[in-house]
Length: 131
Image 1 (tube, rainbow, N blue to C red):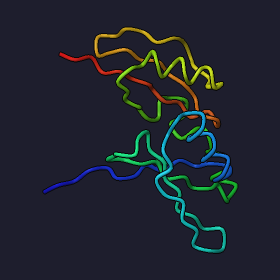
Image 2 (cartoon, rainbow, N blue to C red):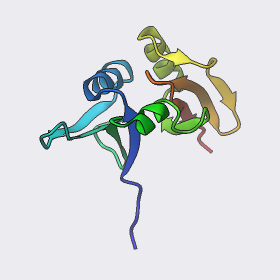
Image 3 (cartoon, rainbow, N blue to C red):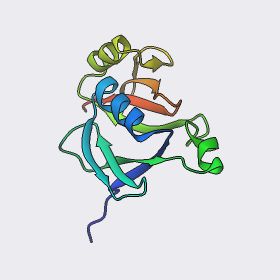
């Protein structure tokens, strides 16, 4: 049996705002942006063009969803973005205005730093240590 996580959903205030931030500020790749009429869109981004898992944007169109934008993990890290160079990505992202909750630290499992997206969702930028 083969199984994997294909997509993870993130609530956003606006599709185009989220696309702009994730592609231009976080350097993600826009994988798909398909319109199905009546405001319905299938928008996915990923850290790289070659990916196993992508993020699906879901526009918060109800009061309940709007309340949850930016707090999908209740203030905890929501996703871990693995990189081959945490310091490089930290510096590039910081120059583009990304909010970091500290500086990269050398941990037993690698180099990591937590940042927030434009809505306040927290991500861990991690360079996994080679053993």
